[in-house]
Image (tube, rainbow, N blue to C red):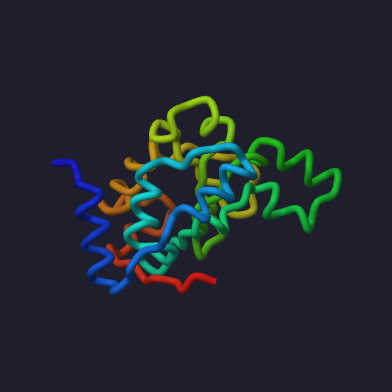
Length: 166
């Protein structure tokens, strides 16, 4: 049986005591800076839960704090890094793990595809290669809820800890 994400997010929100967050300021920034729409599963997650940590390991960013892999590494950029970064430069990062993994979507996918059909990319620690870990954001959340070992550390606990908006 497939997990209903709205019910899952509502249960996590109730258990964690979070109230979610308004979406429009962050959406306006992403539309202005990157001309993209965000998958509805992530928007629903942010609306009900807001930024915070899944299982104390995977940390989700508020919409207004999302950046591309290239933007995150800009302070360290030189010619060699620019060349190595090319495969994942345009990944819009929405979460990072305690181990240094990053999760996101390729901007070019968000532009050319329906956002709900864009695969989720994992950039492993100290890597510039992206691997598809879920065919969509909805599948990504279902895999997390089902206890899939997406990051090599086993199943993440089905709990959410909110993080205050900064």
